[in-house]
Amino acid sequence: MKFVNKFAHNENGATAIEYGLIAGLIAVVIITAVSTIGLDLIAKFTEISAVL
Image 1: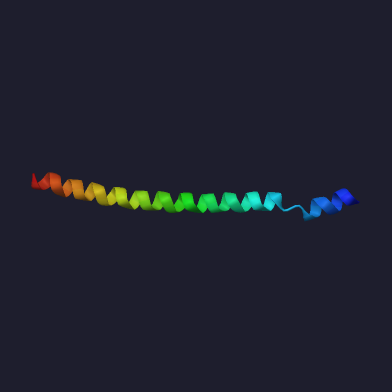
Image 2: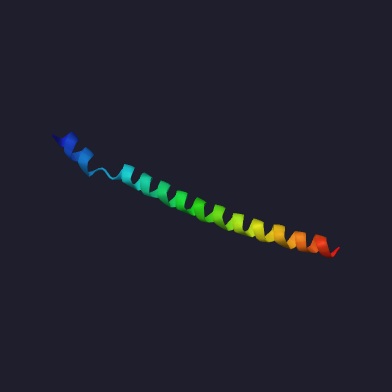
């Protein structure tokens, strides 16, 4: 009975899942930002190339 009670109150797995979700969200934000900056850079280099 002690084992079942201890297992039911163990929150280590939940903490790991929360950290995983946070890391995933940060990765999505970084990918979105880099993608947007990349498109802006391509447009700027195309503009510079056309002027030259």
